[in-house]
Image (cartoon, rainbow, N blue to C red):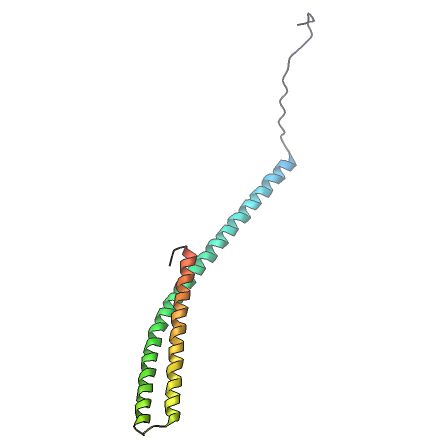
Length: 132
Protein backbone atom coordinates (compact mmCIF):
# COMPACT_ATOMS: atom_id res chain seq x y z
CA UNK A 1 0.00 0.00 0.00
CA UNK A 2 1.22 3.42 -0.76
CA UNK A 3 2.00 5.74 2.07
CA UNK A 4 -0.23 8.47 0.65
CA UNK A 5 -3.10 9.46 2.92
CA UNK A 6 -5.55 10.49 0.15
CA UNK A 7 -6.75 7.17 -1.28
CA UNK A 8 -10.23 5.68 -0.91
CA UNK A 9 -11.86 2.38 -1.76
CA UNK A 10 -15.39 2.53 -3.03
CA UNK A 11 -18.13 0.44 -4.51
CA UNK A 12 -20.63 1.84 -6.96
CA UNK A 13 -24.05 0.24 -7.21
CA UNK A 14 -26.19 1.28 -10.12
CA UNK A 15 -29.91 0.67 -10.06
CA UNK A 16 -32.05 2.30 -12.74
CA UNK A 17 -35.22 3.81 -11.34
CA UNK A 18 -36.94 4.31 -14.66
CA UNK A 19 -36.14 2.27 -17.77
CA UNK A 20 -38.79 2.60 -20.51
CA UNK A 21 -37.41 -0.38 -22.46
CA UNK A 22 -37.83 -2.74 -19.51
CA UNK A 23 -41.34 -1.42 -18.88
CA UNK A 24 -42.28 -1.89 -22.55
CA UNK A 25 -40.95 -5.44 -22.51
CA UNK A 26 -42.94 -6.19 -19.36
CA UNK A 27 -46.14 -4.81 -20.88
CA UNK A 28 -45.53 -6.71 -24.11
CA UNK A 29 -44.94 -9.93 -22.21
CA UNK A 30 -48.14 -9.45 -20.21
CA UNK A 31 -50.10 -8.85 -23.42
CA UNK A 32 -48.65 -12.00 -25.04
CA UNK A 33 -49.56 -13.96 -21.90
CA UNK A 34 -53.17 -12.76 -22.08
CA UNK A 35 -53.37 -13.68 -25.77
CA UNK A 36 -51.99 -17.16 -25.04
CA UNK A 37 -54.54 -17.67 -22.24
CA UNK A 38 -57.34 -16.58 -24.56
CA UNK A 39 -56.13 -19.00 -27.24
CA UNK A 40 -56.12 -21.85 -24.71
CA UNK A 41 -59.68 -20.98 -23.74
CA UNK A 42 -60.75 -20.99 -27.40
CA UNK A 43 -59.12 -24.38 -27.97
CA UNK A 44 -60.85 -25.79 -24.87
CA UNK A 45 -64.22 -24.50 -26.05
CA UNK A 46 -63.69 -25.92 -29.53
CA UNK A 47 -62.72 -29.33 -28.14
CA UNK A 48 -65.69 -29.36 -25.77
CA UNK A 49 -68.05 -28.42 -28.60
CA UNK A 50 -66.60 -31.11 -30.84
CA UNK A 51 -67.03 -33.79 -28.15
CA UNK A 52 -70.60 -32.69 -27.46
CA UNK A 53 -71.40 -32.67 -31.18
CA UNK A 54 -69.98 -36.17 -31.62
CA UNK A 55 -72.00 -37.44 -28.66
CA UNK A 56 -75.19 -35.89 -30.04
CA UNK A 57 -74.42 -37.45 -33.44
CA UNK A 58 -74.16 -40.88 -31.77
CA UNK A 59 -77.46 -40.37 -29.96
CA UNK A 60 -79.23 -39.28 -33.15
CA UNK A 61 -77.70 -42.14 -35.15
CA UNK A 62 -78.82 -44.71 -32.58
CA UNK A 63 -82.36 -43.33 -32.60
CA UNK A 64 -82.45 -43.30 -36.40
CA UNK A 65 -81.04 -46.83 -36.54
CA UNK A 66 -83.99 -48.31 -34.66
CA UNK A 67 -86.38 -46.59 -37.08
CA UNK A 68 -84.35 -47.84 -40.05
CA UNK A 69 -84.50 -51.41 -38.74
CA UNK A 70 -88.29 -51.18 -38.52
CA UNK A 71 -88.36 -49.70 -42.03
CA UNK A 72 -86.36 -52.63 -43.39
CA UNK A 73 -88.63 -55.13 -41.66
CA UNK A 74 -91.70 -53.42 -43.15
CA UNK A 75 -90.12 -53.29 -46.62
CA UNK A 76 -89.24 -57.00 -46.46
CA UNK A 77 -92.79 -57.87 -45.41
CA UNK A 78 -94.15 -55.73 -48.23
CA UNK A 79 -91.85 -57.47 -50.72
CA UNK A 80 -92.87 -60.93 -49.48
CA UNK A 81 -96.53 -59.97 -49.80
CA UNK A 82 -96.00 -58.59 -53.33
CA UNK A 83 -94.06 -61.73 -54.26
CA UNK A 84 -96.86 -63.97 -52.96
CA UNK A 85 -99.47 -61.92 -54.83
CA UNK A 86 -97.39 -62.16 -58.02
CA UNK A 87 -96.95 -65.92 -57.65
CA UNK A 88 -100.66 -66.30 -56.99
CA UNK A 89 -101.52 -64.34 -60.12
CA UNK A 90 -103.10 -61.46 -58.20
CA UNK A 91 -100.24 -58.96 -58.60
CA UNK A 92 -98.25 -57.54 -61.48
CA UNK A 93 -94.54 -57.43 -62.11
CA UNK A 94 -94.65 -53.67 -61.59
CA UNK A 95 -95.91 -54.14 -58.02
CA UNK A 96 -93.18 -56.70 -57.39
CA UNK A 97 -90.40 -54.47 -58.75
CA UNK A 98 -91.71 -51.50 -56.79
CA UNK A 99 -91.69 -53.57 -53.61
CA UNK A 100 -88.19 -54.79 -54.38
CA UNK A 101 -87.00 -51.21 -54.98
CA UNK A 102 -88.46 -50.11 -51.66
CA UNK A 103 -86.80 -53.06 -49.91
CA UNK A 104 -83.40 -52.35 -51.48
CA UNK A 105 -83.65 -48.65 -50.64
CA UNK A 106 -84.51 -49.49 -47.04
CA UNK A 107 -81.56 -51.88 -46.77
CA UNK A 108 -79.22 -49.25 -48.24
CA UNK A 109 -80.50 -46.69 -45.74
CA UNK A 110 -79.92 -49.18 -42.93
CA UNK A 111 -76.35 -49.78 -44.10
CA UNK A 112 -75.78 -46.03 -44.23
CA UNK A 113 -77.25 -45.73 -40.74
CA UNK A 114 -74.80 -48.32 -39.42
CA UNK A 115 -71.95 -46.50 -41.16
CA UNK A 116 -73.00 -43.13 -39.73
CA UNK A 117 -73.16 -44.59 -36.22
CA UNK A 118 -69.74 -46.18 -36.57
CA UNK A 119 -68.33 -42.94 -37.96
CA UNK A 120 -69.76 -40.94 -35.04
CA UNK A 121 -68.37 -43.43 -32.51
CA UNK A 122 -64.95 -43.25 -34.15
CA UNK A 123 -65.03 -39.45 -34.11
CA UNK A 124 -65.89 -39.42 -30.41
CA UNK A 125 -63.21 -41.97 -29.63
CA UNK A 126 -60.66 -39.93 -31.55
CA UNK A 127 -61.67 -36.76 -29.72
CA UNK A 128 -61.35 -38.30 -26.28
CA UNK A 129 -58.28 -40.35 -27.33
CA UNK A 130 -59.66 -43.75 -26.43
CA UNK A 131 -59.40 -46.96 -28.31
CA UNK A 132 -62.44 -48.28 -30.15
